[in-house]
Length: 555
Image (cartoon, rainbow, N blue to C red):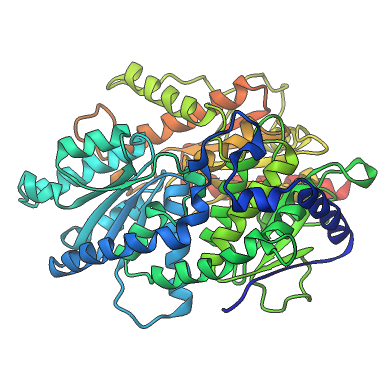
């Protein structure tokens, strides 16, 4: 699509216009255009944190370097790209590939498989294409537990195919920052390196090497992406006719307490044809950029927002009929411009909310990963330390830090969880499972039962991407963490990680246990349900949640 615009109406428009006037009087557009970090205090003197504004132009030089790598990879028969990354590093590349697929562009493309969490199906898919595979490991810091596991598994699989150590090294590309721990590790291993600016915030790097390199290797047209972003860039220095300023005013203005004492700090994102990687990328951008100091913007998807919630503001992304949507706001722009538009708006919303959007936030996400690593080390080759369930029904274990009353059943447990959701809060469902079962199937019933929005995602990718808003934001979430034994026939779940005393299933459970401990340490209502049979248990759990929703309607 051509062009870009932000359309809004009603009380949202009134709120946005007041917020925009405040932004202009505060000199925000001009200061951003000048890349003046003092907008967020005199101590924020790092101009590099605003380098993302230059990426539509600066990243053009990157493409010529990547083109040479693409040509070499295709010459070697490598057209299947495996991207190992958790969070922002993978979501932008996924969004680029999804947009490429929808456009149906006639250009030679490869495949992109993302490994970012607990589902073994993508790994199985990738291992079947090993002879065509180039592995990209993307991280601004070090390699995650999953990244280490997947790297070891691929290196071992290449070795079994008879590749030499030099040939194996040629099958890996590392995208990281100059001087990062992963930089040094990659050099020691002899891997190819793509280095980025260490001062660029990771959640503002969609148009950097993190978002572009994996997608270009898989065949995406990044030049058009950058052209669309560059077309938007001149308007971002204006006081008027600045769509980024208006979107930021909408987001930040609505999130502040309005008439009636209600802050619309939850954003429901809609995409044509259903939610995709763009919505997921926006969710993490808002979570990391604004989720701090007891506030922030939480992104919600339509299945978890059945009904009207006074604190939810609807945003439609490229709706087919602008102005006729149920959403309060419509954002119209091609993908490259969407990236830059939302980054700019997040910066503006952060200024309105009094937080620095470029700071990575607290250490909650890293703490949970470190705790998982500690659990794995302590367990060695034995089982992970785990609390006994307080209740078991039909193979579904309920793990809680408090006992349930005698005679309680699964519906009572779930009803207690929905009752624990604060009046201004939300329910979060995180699944550490392999297969198709998702919190998406539970979200509509949970929303009806609790009368509050529901967010969901797979672990550890979703907690990693959105952890700041849950743990350092308003603190008004209640959490259901779902784990399970490996499904029958899932041989990869027990796949030993070369050089480690655990397999993928054990790693997945350690991640979930650490996440539960992290949430409980912050006093957040948290239940874990473990499915001894994940296939049968998923069906029983879905039925129980629907029953709770039905009972709620009857009250």
